[in-house]
Image (cartoon, rainbow over all chains, first blue to last red; front, side, top):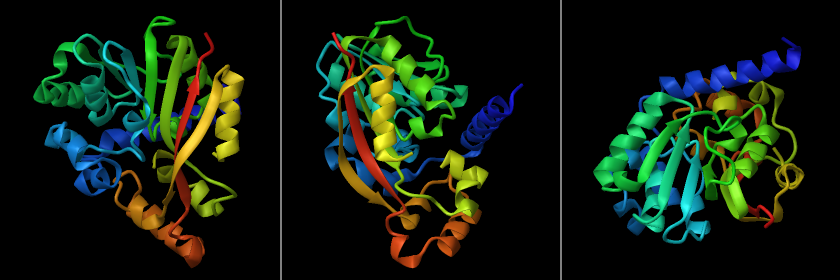
Length: 192
Length: 69
């Protein structure tokens, strides 16, 4: 295995181990910074507790009833559930997460929200999305692309699963300039 | 990843109509709310990042783009 591939694998392992180890998300304090009272009332408390995003992509995604929406890196499912509410029962909401325990949380929260009939959670990686090409109208994600060591590959996969005219709406963090090396090289910063 | 790098990756993937907005400062105090940032890395951030930048270490953005028809 080449050095770059080893580094990519190390990042992937570190991120997945970090997410597998946590016992809650950012909770209500984080959620209240990102979502309105009305939006928080649309999701069960468990999904709020597991909020780990950095923005509110559903608010910007202009979802329409009947659309198929993919939430890349769905975590506890807060954005998947909000998206499911927007596309309605004639649509389809799909949460994708690399960790089965996150998918299970998403399924439980979707059932509590009453959207399980048109919402599913798939285990898979954003660099290898287990969906056919052209099967999605809108892809959203929230603080997830930065976790990938192969961001261009992840974007190419999202492009593949979108149909012609399909849209992507992502919340993420950008950094201008350099972080101190002690921060940039800290493995837990990769997962954060 | 810088904002211009993010937009460039989307364009290279084939996306058009790339839009970046919804800018929000993201500081160390906010990072500390997330369990994924360990107390150790938060301490390192507080020690190594200049005080006048600690409230805006990164920027939260919304990025939208479209796959051509």
